Every structure is written in C-alpha cells, then in structure tokens.
Amino acid sequence: MKLVRYACLLIVVAAAAMLMFPGCSSEAKDNYVITEPEPGPPLNPTGTGTGGTGTGGTGTGGTGTGGTNTNALAFNPSSTTIDPGQTVNFTLSGGVPPYEIGFLTAADLQSYSSGQSPAGNYDQNTGAGNYVVGPNGDCTDRLYGRDSAGTQAFLTITVNAGSVVDGDGNPDEMEVFDMVNTERAKAGVGPLAWCDGLYACAKAHSNDMCERGFFDHTNPEGEGPSERAQYGHAGRFTFAPIVPDPYSWGVAENIAYGYTTPAEVMNGWMNSSGHRANILNGSYTHIGVGQCDGCLRHWTQNFGTR
Image (cartoon, rainbow, N blue to C red; front, side, top):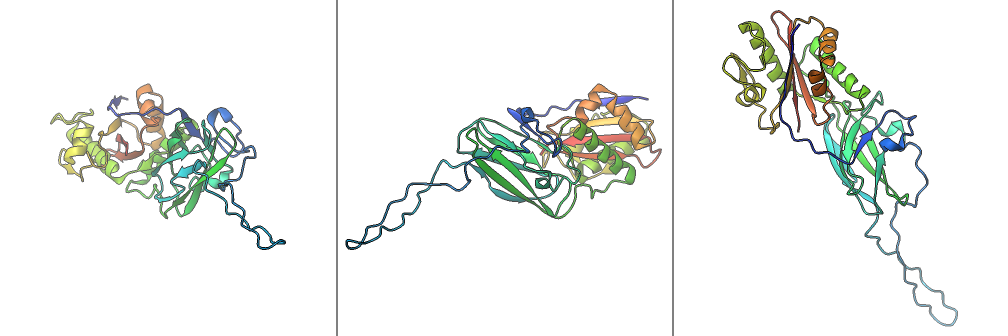
C-alpha cells in the first residue's frame, strides 16, 4: 500500500525552551514544568513611602503611600480571551531572568480535559513565547511564570465556548483527527486544531484522486497542495481558498491509499518516517482530514500554520 509524503516549506522559529506539561504529577524541571514551585516574594509591587508631618508636640506621623515598582515581574497580556485550539502569544518581563514558565496544578489547564501534554514555546531570557489552548472551551487556563529570584506572575486565559472537534468531517475523519492529537501528546507536542478549510481542501483532493484514478500530491493539472489551497479547487471539486489567508506559508500534506479504517491509515502513516514527521511537526497549528466519498480508500491530511 503506497504512502506518499509532500514536503512543504514552512518557517520554524526555534525557542530556547518548550512548555511541556506531561501531567500534574510531573516535577520535570528540565522541561520547565513547575508543579511545586518554591515560595517567592508577593506579586504586588512595593516601593518606599514618605511619612507625613506630625501636628504639635504629640502629633503622629502620617502613613506613607508605597511607590510603584516598574520592574515587577508580569505577563503581557496578563489576561486574554481566545477560542479553543488557538494560540496565545505572550511576554513575561521584569524581574530577574532567566524565566521558568509552566503551571501550578492540572486545574490550571481546564481546556485540556485529559491533562495530556499541552505545549508551547518560550525564550528563557526574553520571556517571549506562546501557548496553544486545548480543544475544549467555556473554561479558564492559567500559566505560571517565575524569575530566577522566585518572583511569581500569572497569565489568565479565558477560553470561549466551543470545541475544535466540532468539524465537518465524518466519524472516521474525526477519529483520525483524534488519533493525530493522541500521537502528538505521546511525543510531547501540542494538539492541532481542526480547520474546516483544510478539511475541505483535503476532502477535495481525496475525491479527485478517487474519481480520476491517480495517487499523487500533484494532480493532472500540475497543482500541488498549496496551489490547490490557493485556487480553491481539486479537479471539479471546489472549496473556499485558504492560501494565503489564513495559511500564508501554504499547506503540507500526507496522503494514503488502500486503507479502510482510521486505525489502519494512522498505523501506516506513523510507521513511515516522513508522514510521522508531518504528524508530529510542532510548527503546525491546524489540520484537516479528508476521506474520499467513493471507494473510501483515498485519504488526505492537510496541515497549516497560523
């Protein structure tokens, strides 16, 4: 059974550290997971007050007002609202770098109902990073930051109602989607969000391969995945274009033929180094999975980065 991988160029920005959350029992400091942080100074900034002037010989000095510590450790933003499966960009600044970023308890990661390996990237020295919100909505996630002096700060993320798994795919396609994120969790990579646009692109290509009897990333017109995603068609099958908006760097693709169940096709892809690399690529943020409607043996995965 033939498996083919399409290599699509995408820019990958490496960060100094990964946000890895294997579970609430972990104390893996080398992964910058903080489940039992050391006590640190209070979050509230402090300053030097100026005493008031007493009145008369027995007067009492007034109470000074604390100044503002402009170097206080803080997340920017300190709070935000976002949809399930989306990415929060943040900066932890102030205090004394290098920084550690993680979470306090599993309860701080409510969008991950299973607590499995949410992930992101951050720079230990600049504090700049990102966090991929889990697939569940109507909840609150919270990140914890600490500088080298033990000072603490928090980022509160309100996740809107909804779910990234409410896609247009059929049950088998959505099962493959779930399996992809299970494999990414095992590898310590953040989950992909479902994208109906990538799904439509993948579905069209699977249907086109089935109908016209070919098996390749390039169709008879010479169009690869990114071209199809830009033009909004695969043969006679049309969909709304998704390149360059929102996928400015194009799309990557896995295809397979001859497999009839989600377990079979995922086993085939995961046992092929190139396909596995696409599935576990941490730079991708979204996926769509399309199975042909005819023989049910053509499969396409399209990946994109927002």
